[in-house]
Image (cartoon, rainbow, N blue to C red):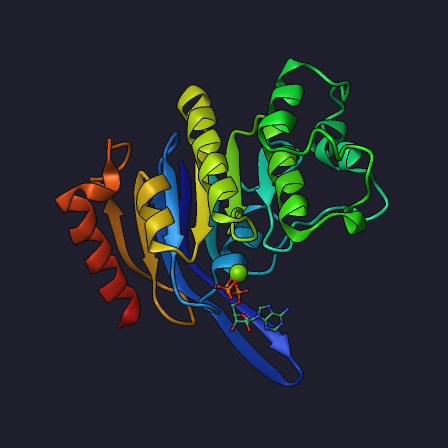
Amino acid sequence: MIKIEDLSVYYKWKDQEIMALDRLSIDIKSGEIYTFIGPSGCGKSTLLYVLSGIKKEYEGRVSINGRDIDPKAQRIGLILQNYGLVPWKTVYQNAMLGRKIKKEPTVMDEYSRYIFQRLGIDDLLHRYPKELSGGQQQRVAIARAFLLKPDLLLMDEPFSALDAITREEIQELFLNIWKEHQVTTVFITHSVDEALYLGSNIVVLSPAPGRVLGNIKNPCFMMDNLRSRDEYQLMSNQLRNSIKH
Ligand SMILES: Nc1ncnc2c1ncn2[C@@H]1O[C@H](COP(=O)(O)OP(=O)(O)OP(=O)(O)O)[C@@H](O)[C@H]1O
Ligand SMILES: [Mg+2]
């Protein structure tokens, strides 16, 4: 379980202090997918920086399975909003970076071949990030996170740069992988539709500075023909309204 208690984060900008998160508290249960939704600037990326160990200055308490966050000791797969690829490494090297840091084999194996192929980047492995489109870079970041087989997967709008068809394919790939490994996932999204499709739980954040407005168990999770269900329309309207206010 990830336990977040009274998490407040401030940024210093010139001589001002900007509050990005305001005493945010939530328990994230192991093996579940929590989709976080909230307006632009409410602190969603900031929350992910804290959970991944990138941002260490904060008030409050955050623990993973009762221990402090330690990316060296924990297997944390991270997909940043700006992809976070290393410019001087190839697609293949970028995708294997998580394994390399963990001092694990980085040779092509069956799983990596499968992931590259499903993400449609198997022809791009020798290119450098600057030779890729935004959506291709995003898919490399996704490959890197999946190849690590993480215990905790943190994703910041991971599918935002993809066209609609590719997005649907990769959403499905993600759900398939999740069904197999039940990896605890924190998934940031702008999209109500995505939050309902992918989240076993949906967390609504307030406008900046972010607090938890609602934490709902998603009744639509893994439903067949989701979008044609009454529950879906109801939840969708409720979520849209709660984000507006
Ligand atoms: N390095 C920084 N210096 C100063 N202010 C910052 C910095 N990074 C973020 N902020 C501010 O902190 C707040 C939260 O930013 P954050 O990026 O976490 O929001 P977000 O919810 O991820 O937004 P978006 O949906 O647009 O990605 C914003 O008001 C932002 O302007
Ligand atoms: Mg963000």
